[in-house]
Image 1 (spheres, each protein chain N blue to C red):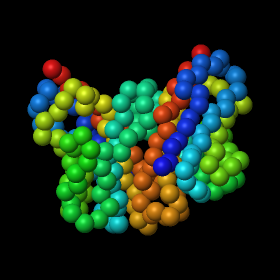
Image 2 (image 1 turned 60 degrees about the vertical axis):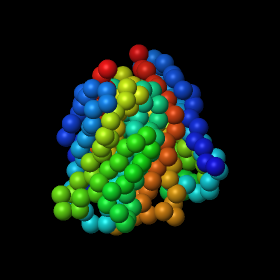
Image 3 (image 1 turned 180 degrees about the vertical axis):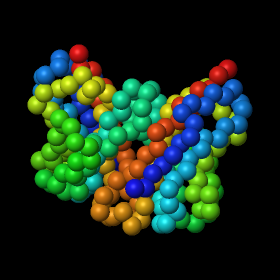
Image 4 (image 1 turned 135 degrees about the horizontal axis):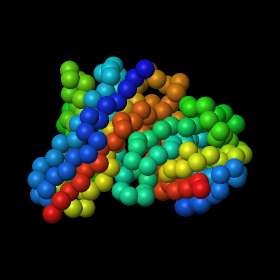
Length: 116
Length: 114
């Protein structure tokens, strides 16, 4: 079965420092990749997505991610974080051939804790 | 524009009582619909998805069920709640015509079973 791995369950970082949240997936055949953010007691909001084209994808709130096919990774980065970036971040993948199931596969999430 | 609603926002129910959570989508037709659950401090677990009226696929065997009586309405139910049913329930939709399944999430329902 296809899988998505977020190795870091929690990432503490100081305000204005850079951050990278890691995401790896099991197969690079025809993948579409997403990062979502969840603030406490809220639904998930799309940060960015990779469908095709440039491997560097820019999203909302100053986040970006790079699709690396050879390493089957889609790490999320931000050069300078703010207190307001404290949230749970989910990586999600869908595989183009998986048209029957029509569902995203989510990683387990990474809690980003920005400290003053 | 499309919007997705869930209600109630919070719910406290005793063990053994029934459950009905509702999700509706506005501004689109024939969406795929999904129910997810988040247990405390854990990731998202896909419970059910639906590609059309009356078509429900179950991902995890449990005491929950789902129904889609109308194109843009998705209901999560239980006849008898368990303590382990506590969690944050999220509904989501995606466009059937798009192969990449970008999903749009509702605000969620916080369910506490006592």
